[in-house]
Image 1 (cartoon, rainbow, N blue to C red):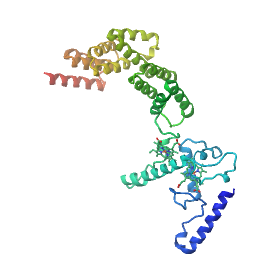
Image 2 (cartoon, helix red, strand yellow):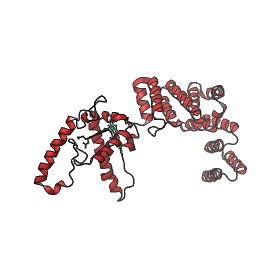
Image 3 (cartoon, protein in one colour):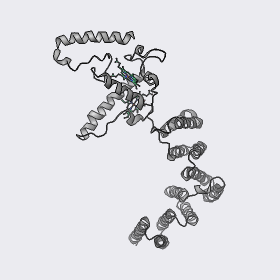
Image 4 (cartoon, protein in one colour):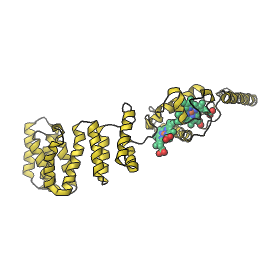
Length: 335
Ligand code: HEC
Ligand code: HEC
């Protein structure tokens, strides 16, 4: 009680004294009772300050109940009446960080964005970056940081916690690509077993072909690395016992094949594309990829034959028609 009212009394005295010296500047001055503003204007109205503080609290995902979220930045206690909280204190580091942020947001809006065009239609606010969480790090980075600090168990529990808390919000991207991307990075960093666990968790949350495809490709790459093309082909057969039939889509071998092609394993890539065409004779990607690889190998006739056969079957398919044109152009240039 005392602290705030006492301060307001002092303010009243100060403003009255001030008023007697320079009456003209006093009109705008309001007795808001605030004593420690460095970013907001000193004479900010109570309504405006309240709006700003609520934005600070909400956009960082802090609890709103009984001012609990205010306590992230302000000194006080849920056991004390709100009037006894010391909002002016700078004791908590988060308050100083928030000042830096408030000044930054103002600079972005009034300085940079205002310079772009006279009419500014989008205001940047705390939520633009924080979107309901204190740490604005994207989920992929956050999970990799957890992995660095505490291994794959830590990563898994961070994901489950974030998902339980934020799934319905826009704080994090929980789509299937997030964990798949994390797994790919782990595999690339020489942690394939951790990558397998992350793929498994992805399948647990997304029973979708895309989630399965990540794990399938990782298994196939491992087989290729340890036993070459033959091992890869027989591993593909073995995958049928481990994944549901819907998981077998043209994209599995297609993406893997192009990866191998780019790393110089053109023969294996071709084998995979032939397998893909045999398994998915009605899919365009299996025709397209094989046609390009045949073209690359100088087998122009068969490449064109494949593409033209597709167009005969699908006369309205635009990408098919483009493929024929492209292959004819390449064939012409090669002559
Ligand atoms: C993310 C940090 C943060 C949160 C959360 C927050 N504030 Fe603040 N608050 C600040 C900062 C920073 C200032 C100082 C602004 C300045 O320097 O212009 C401030 C200033 C104030 C002041 C003025 C204090 C004075 O006398 O100078 C009051 C009152 C206040 N906040 C109330 C609240 C209330 C009520 C809540 C909860 C609804 C809240 N704040 C939530 C960061 C926060
Ligand atoms: C342009 C993006 C951006 C905007 C807009 C933004 N922040 Fe931040 N904020 C960050 C980043 C990035 C960090 C983490 C800095 C670091 O790595 O320590 C951060 C950290 C913070 C922290 C420290 C987090 C902690 O762990 O306690 C607070 C508090 C904070 N911001 C408050 C705010 C408030 C309040 C606003 C709106 C006035 C705001 N931020 C607007 C990007 C932003």
